[in-house]
Image (cartoon, rainbow, N blue to C red; front, side, top):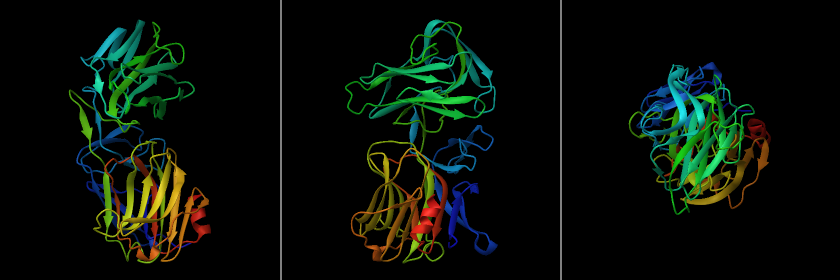
Length: 405
């Protein structure tokens, strides 16, 4: 198999503000191939040490949550609507039959900034104010088990409300909940609902410690440790956005690499490989990764990797701003995937997770002329790049199947 002309990731990461280094190491000679990074706000990520860390504006985020090799974290713009995300004793909360001991445990930051919540009766921790959404809400909170294995998160007063239980012993949740395991025995729990067709899109959120899965009856004496409350518009929880007194917005991540024809991609043939993960979000088509002519408007000539309205990922050949060949649902969203396409001026091959894929439509590859890589789209979805390789030769079907296995 030929050597790739560009490598990015696979546990080899080099970052600085506004730049992420891909590289070519053919013949043992290292040559850097920088990507431009653009995010005009800070952001958080989980570092190699397992702790939540902060990145400065325009600094790439290499996240190691549940991935020892790390991944480039690319996220849409989101706002944490909760004014004070870490002050559970503050004015943002209505506390009924419970006590909060502030700064009582080591938080996901690695500092003594987590609180202990203990119920003294059948009470609840509830957001004091209501929150308004347009299409979907997601409520998330970090929890560390105390003496109770069950947690219930609840939305209330929306047309579409929910009470969803979590089992910290089995690391599972009822339908509609997501439980993510963080280092040092922390979990991040979240609930999401599509409310785009609801009449009432205003509501608030509850936290309970019951003795039964999904119950909204807290039990006196039950306690746990809590940290980092987040309330955001969208159908899944994004990386933690700390707030202190007012809502905070994290701006979308953008990356771009231009002018690499002749040193990375061949004008008439090549292979593109991506190992990635992404959360599922069903909504408008999101034209996320574009391989195109440099400086083009939209994607005139090249390939588009699209996270579509359903649960799949599509690859579209684009010629003169129109779609030619298309691989539909080449892999399923919401899991780790490896995909590759190999092309010449007359042939197009596809592979997803080791399986040969076929395209529909008519391949018009004589127009392919790839100079630029860029993520784009008005409503970007989350996309975690674990490993990416570009070749200036067209690999065979057997080779791309082996690459994606």
